Image (cartoon, helix red, strand yellow):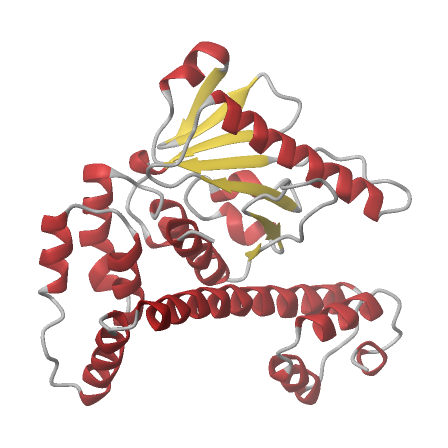
Length: 305
């Protein structure tokens, strides 16, 4: 997993539950039964009403229960071949969803492509309808096909997962804007991964002067020591481990939210003990098993065994 892609996926995994107040969650999908046909991830829509009040493109997900997301960071290919491969991955996921259900799912899997900007060739082969700053409907298409041009999006906290795909001057503007809004660990990761200008990078690094707060200073020292470790192998392991742990944390949050949603819809009340049991569970397999059981269980006790 490349550092740029990894950072973008980590941001989606950590920020989506927070900025949508639990209305959507990021999942890293399993690889489907076609060689190398695996999308970057998908957004599982848990509470559409919570997305409706957010800045675009979030409300566009309200009519769906899932949205496939392709992330194209600065320097990634966005030519016709890559976009065709992205739509192939969308189709593969659609087929997978059809085969998962009986009777078969009859919907159309939407796809959102997040990239720094709109490629010029797209204008000549597709119809583009701008419905919000940086948000375009791509047509003609039998399924929802959105292009999210991160460089054109407004700077607001709920759009940070999309804004990390910015490039050039727009990326510098984002980095300066977001730095005081995030904790030290996240900003250091941003400086490590995102290809902002050297001037902006150095300016932001100067903000990490020694702090009088012992807790902040201790975190700063640990992060700097990790990043400046003499062993590149150790440094790489720390980076990859942090990304994987962050994505797993987002998946656990989403799994707990989905379980509670199913139990609530079925009218199965949760006691304080049940709530604590769900919060304490850190195994995705167990949460998935509870979710399956919740569909047919007659009580919360039956579901959480």
